[in-house]
Image (cartoon, rainbow, N blue to C red):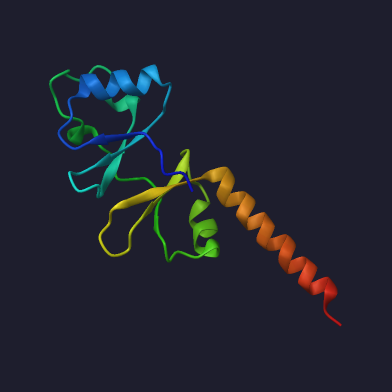
Length: 126
């Protein structure tokens, strides 16, 4: 899980967030409130052409894949079907605060590792 991730804060101006995302060649960032609770996701494609003085909150999407620390790997894999994005967001189940993100590739690798382990167990069984 990654803990260093691109974020924007609620009420930030469109101009600053757009510049940050485009300069870093990022396709999205997470929008957080003042306490670090996830609000949604902001994509530069939604910000380009919007008034510079507007806040990013108005252009936030809530379609990001979100899990908490109690979500099982099989639940994650089931929801990964049809997912379009860079990473799944992981939040605290108690307060909704952002814990980090799990890149899609890391989720798939964890699943494949689990499948391999299960196959090994099956092959070792009498």
